[in-house]
Length: 68
Image 1 (cartoon, one colour):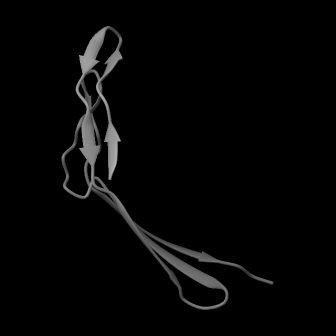
Image 2 (cartoon, rainbow, N blue to C red):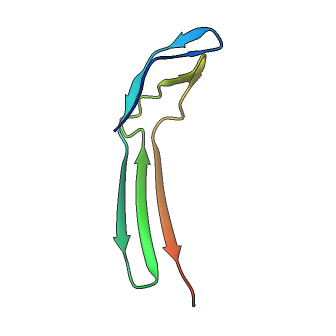
């Protein structure tokens, strides 16, 4: 979870919010790692700046590898 407290943006008070986030990592082999990440899991789309909402739920799958 990530919590942002109330703040002022251009003279406008923006309310605080809490986002649920998670990441799962797995070592697939000696050379590969997979990462599954979810941001704003509850799709709350909070006000991140005065007049602008967040992007909402984002799911990412990343495959990292090394080559010798």
